[in-house]
Image (cartoon, rainbow, N blue to C red; front, side):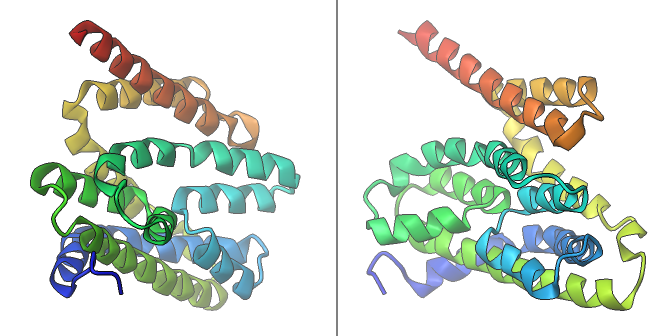
Length: 235
């Protein structure tokens, strides 16, 4: 393995991600349950977690599949939802730009909301030393956690009818609240959250999850506008 990585920092990344693992576990169970409930074969539901590995997009894709939505709409919807990862990458780039391409590609695939929240704080407070190993530890912990609980959800979804109606999805709300709340001290993040929240309420109920697309696009646009205005004011 590359000299960028060491066991101590890797374990530290996994350790600091533990609270996120607990919050994401019911999320994975619910996804597995909903996926088989929507008619996906168990192997396809697990393959989506293995190869797509994007929780919110997976949920939206499954709901669109169950509604009989055509593939181009599903592709466009999940693409828009995942555009937030471009902002994540831009934030982490100053630290990651010197890493080998093969590792940047792998860690980009494993980058999630939870891992971003953990590693962004680590990068900002402690700099580049051990950063790659730290992100690898966080990423692998989240990835393996998601695969395991997706499998649990698939098994339970076959064995326990109506499991998706037990209210476990509250864990998803709690997890994302914990991720977002510390970021709201920054004006771009606050503008993004406020704009996305208002748009989501105004557009609630639109078909094909278009309300989510509008909210994500509006929130990202608001954050970029505030960041640009802030930079202009300093020059």
